[in-house]
Image (cartoon, rainbow, N blue to C red):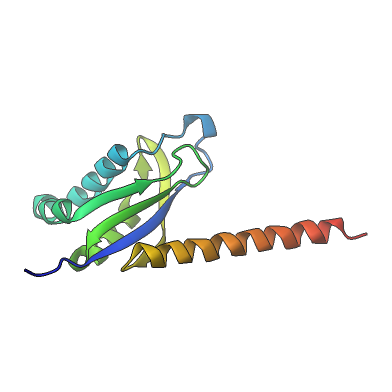
Length: 137
C-alpha cells in the first residue's frame, strides 16, 4: 500500500475595503468549500472538479468574523499547484468581495505552525517598535 502524501496550505481571507465589517460573510468550512468548488469548475471544468474535489479537504477555518480569518486546507501533493491557482481565482465569498492570500504551503502542519508563529512574532515586534517610537519625547 502506498502512502498518500499531502500538502497543507495555510491561507487568509482579505476582505476588500468597500466591504463593511458588519456585512462580511461568516467564514465556515462549508462556504469555503463551495467557493473552492465553484472556482475549480470555472478554471478546469467538470474533470478538474472531480480530481481536486476528491483530494481536497478543509481542515480548519479560524474565526470567521475576524479581519483576516485563517484557514487550513489539505490537498494531495499532485494537485497542490492547481489548488494555489484556484485560490488566486477566488474573488468573492458569499457575494462579498475578497482576496485569498496564501500564507504557507508545507508538508506538515508543524511547519505551518512554526511559520505562523514567526509571522505573528514579527507583526508584534513591528507594532512594539511603532509604539516605542511614538512614546519617545
